[in-house]
Image 1 (cartoon, rainbow, N blue to C red):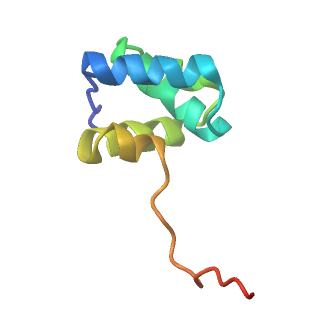
Image 2 (tube, rainbow, N blue to C red):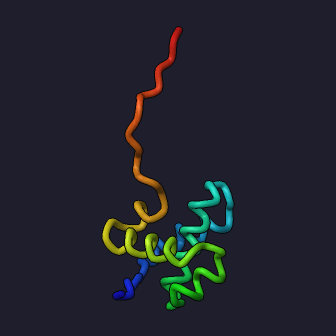
Length: 89
C-alpha cells in the first residue's frame, strides 16, 4: 500500500490547531484534526493511530481524503441522502 504524504499550508495548520485547542467541534472532527496535524509532522499511520486512539483504517481514510479532496472534506462528513426534514406549522 502506498503511503499518502500530507503537507499542510500554514493557514490550514493554524486552523487545525485552533480546532484542537478550542474543543467546540464534534469529537470526530477534533480527532481528524489531530490525525492531519500528526501526519503533517511526519508520523507514521501506526504512530498516529496509537496516539489518537483511532483505528489504522480511520487514519488511512482521513489522510486519503485530505490528499484527494482537501482538508475541509477530510474533517467533515459528506452530506447524506435521506428524507428532507419537514416542519409543520
